[in-house]
Image 1 (tube, one colour):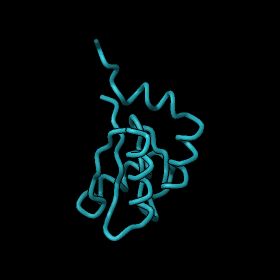
Image 2 (image 1 turned 135 degrees about the horizontal axis):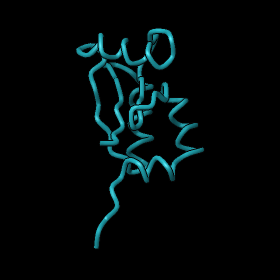
Image 3 (image 1 turned 135 degrees about the vertical axis):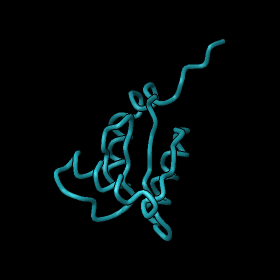
Image 4 (image 1 turned 30 degrees about the vertical axis):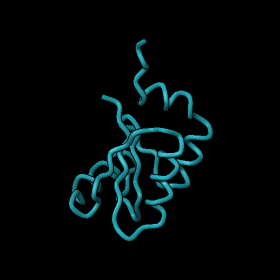
Length: 93
C-alpha cells in the first residue's frame, strides 16, 4: 500500500509544518513517533541517504525518502499530481 509516513517528535515546528502541508493538500498520512521508533528511522534514512538523520521530520512517500518539511514542500510543488494519484485512492461512483 502506498502511504505517506511522517516521523515526528514533540515539540517540533517543522513537523507541524509538514503535517499542515499534507493536510492542506488532502493527502492522508501516518504519523510515526521518531523517539519510539528511533532504530527504524535511523535504518530507513541511512539506507536512503547513506547517513543517519539529524533532524525531524523525516518523510517517506510510498517508501521513497523525501526528507524534511522544506523538501516535502518542494516535492509537492513539483509532483503533487503524481503523489495524489499514488496515495489517494480513486473514488468509484
